[in-house]
Amino acid sequence: MRATRTTELGTGMFVLLGFAALFFLVTQITNREIGFGEGGYRLTASFEQIGGLKAGAPVSMSGVTIGRVESIGYDFTEYKARVVLRIEGGYDRIPDDSDAAIFTAGLLGGQYIGISPGGSGTFFVDGDQIEFTQSAIVLENLISKFLFSKAAEQGAAGGAGEQGAN
Amino acid sequence: MKRLAHELAERIGDSLVSLGRYTLFTLRLLAETPRALLRFRLVVEQVHNAGALSLVIIMLSGLFVGMVLGLQGFDLLERFGSEDSLGTAAALGLVKELGPVVTALLFAGRAGTALASELGLMRATDQLSAMEMMAVDPVRRVVMPRFLGGVFSMPLLAAVFSMIGIFGAQLVGVQLMGVDPGQFWSQMRGAVEHDDVLEGVIKSCVFGVACSAIAVYEGYHSIPTAEGVGRATTRTVVISSVVVLLLDYMLTAVML
Image (cartoon, rainbow over all chains, first blue to last red; front, side, top):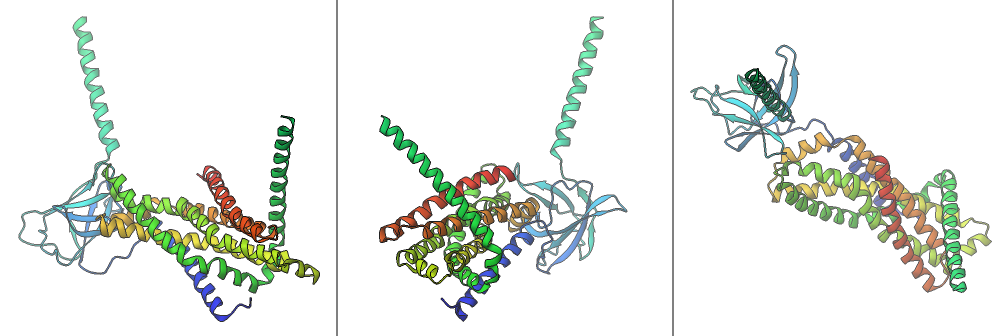
């Protein structure tokens, strides 16, 4: 019944592992910055609206993942969202007039950045900004625009009908 | 007919009596807790028995539960084209539900039975009476450290279970099914709140108290025969499982 060194060691390891697991749950699976491998180069892009884009989302060209969103911040000089992309080192021949757009994977899927290449002969280098960007489409805006335009149409049609009757 | 009614009334009376005994015993355990914490060495020994020795089965189960969750979650989410949310689904499922509940069920089977049969055997071999003869309170010396060991171990075991489970889901989802690792982790981070983790921890603490109290009660009050010890062990698993599932529903309803 005496606590020997082995049982103490086992208990210590168990308790350490348990608290490490708790620490992992609290810090790693809840929202916090993630450190990606330092490699490749950085590009920045400003968007009017990023929707549900999150750090860690993929950056793709023609569907091939070429990098990740490293961080997202707000730029008070432009009043736009500033997104920092980390592009893998192998993909260093992106024309510097390429444009970046935010897409949604599937109906409810996560959002990602798609880059479509431009025609310039010079390429992006570390620290460049992507000039041409296209915001995320916010579904609610789209629906409300559609409904309002529909309502306006009907209102106009109704008005015309009344006038005709008079 | 009259005899039947009489018997029924007796049965109901009996179960009320045992419910009352349970409650009083658990209250006594909780009241003894501060004093028992002073004899820290005994508690440490029981943390080893209840926690460290359950670690392997918890980790193995966690891995496989996580992997199944990865497979099933992927299959389900793919139908809506939202397999990128697999990380969120797996993490929330594990942290809030499966981690605490499955850990408690495994704990009842692995550590609860060990506690019940150990105490039952002590009862059957008159070790507990011998302690009383020597003016040593067996509840303080034997029962309390075992109870506290279980209470302390459960949240840690549940946390280990959830962590391994998330890696299991990641293993299947990302490596096998091709979910994007960035989406897996970043969507999980975006959706899981500290409150979700706290909910799981609270649940596992409650389950720890319940499972440990049931195990030590059944062992301590077992009939001092070989058959009685066997029955105490069985009852420990059955009662613990039912109580855990019942408490789980109530806790979820309260905290959701």
